Image (cartoon, rainbow, N blue to C red; front, side, top):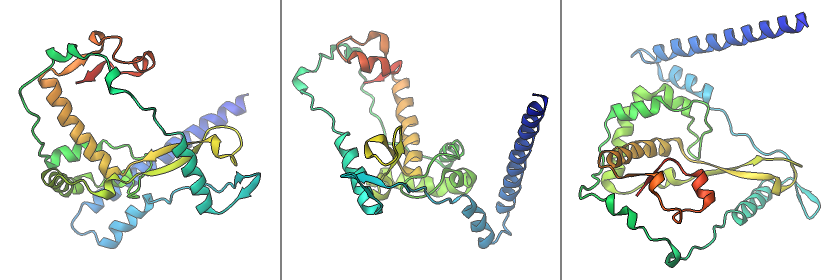
Amino acid sequence: MNCKRLYDKLRNLIQCKIKLAKQSYNVSYINELNTTNTSHADYWSFLYQFWKPNKQCNYPITLNEKPVHDEYVKCNLFNEYFASISNYPAYDINKLPPLNFLANFLTDHRLLPPIFDPFQVFRVLSSLHPNKCKGFDNFPNRILKICSQSLATPFSLLFNLILSSEVFPTSLKTATVIQIHKTGSQTVVQNYRPIVLLPSLSKVFEKLLYKHVYSYLQYHKLLIPKNILPVSVFSQNLQRQATHWHVR
């Protein structure tokens, strides 16, 4: 028992030392990259350390009691199954409950389009989780976070151009759907669930818009407390999942 405790203590100590060493290495390298004497080769060699390839499903999928190894066929099987479980029931708009209680939550002030400055973009970039999966753009959050100071200005120009032109790039709307194994055999399609990965840059843009809209709603008192919502507005299942505030 004493040997086991000593082993766990030493293992935790070594893991902590390794983590601190990696952090110290990254900080020193980042400080070196921020200097004007850094070459392009050194800059990209450091960034490529975080550019890890996506994991693929190496298990065969059973189709008509036969294993399927072809990646294209497996993708089609997953696509058909995920599409079949993603259908939402149709709602009758005439059966919606009355929304008369919203009369007290109106305003004549229009929501003006935002103009993002580099500091706002920098704050969002620096707050990204570095270990989140990358989306269709194959651009990891760790790079955006590390280079947030350098990328804040060009990204702010890009986001303002998107708002002024009223055109959202197709590449930022394209998502990657990956399969996550739930339980049971890994050769059965029904034992997987889909996860949608959006491009990292589109999520940054979404966070900036969310902060702008939320501050507008909060300033003009357009956020409706949950306790004044009629019971008929949402089903009991949705009420359990709802947040404390709802937006008109």
